[in-house]
Length: 171
Ligand code: ADP
Image (cartoon, rainbow, N blue to C red):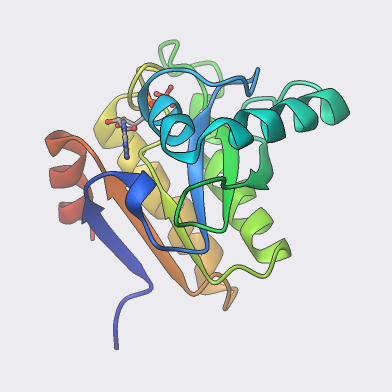
C-alpha cells in the first residue's frame, strides 16, 4: 500500500492536488518565497480573494489558516497558513508551527479535500531551523492523520536540497 505521506522535490505551484498550502504572512497580501511563487502562478484572482478574507476576518495570526480559491493553479484551492518567525525557540515557535500544520489539515477536511501539499513552512524567510521544523511537520501530520481518514494523501514539497534531504530521511 502506498504511504499516505509522500515527499516530493520541486515546486508546489505545479502540484495537481485538491489543495496546496501557502506559507503566508499575517497580512495575507503576498510576499517572497513560496508565497510569491504561488501568487505569480495563481494570477491576480488570488490576491483579490485574499483581500476579501482580510476584509472579513482581519489579519491571520501565526498558527491559524484560511482558505481561498486557487486562480490559475492546478489545485482547487489554497490554504494560507502563517508559520512562526524564529526568535530563538523560546517564543512558542514549535507549538505555532504544529498549529499551522494541524489547522491546515483541519481546513482541508472541513472542505472535503482528499489530497494536500505542504511547503516547509517557516524554513525560509522566517528562519526556523530546518531539521527541527521538518520533525515538527512530520510529527504534526502523522499524529493528525492516524486518527482521521481524511485527507488521504499528504505531500511534503521540498524546494531546496537541504529540506529534501531532511524530509526523505524522516520518511
Ligand atoms: P516562510 O516565510 O514561512 O519562511 P518562505 O517562502 O520564505 O516561507 O520559505 C518556506 C519554504 O518554502 C522554504 O523552505 C523554501 O525553500 C520553500 N519554497 C520556496 N519556493 C517554493 C516553491 N515554489 N515550492 C515549494 N517550496 C518553496
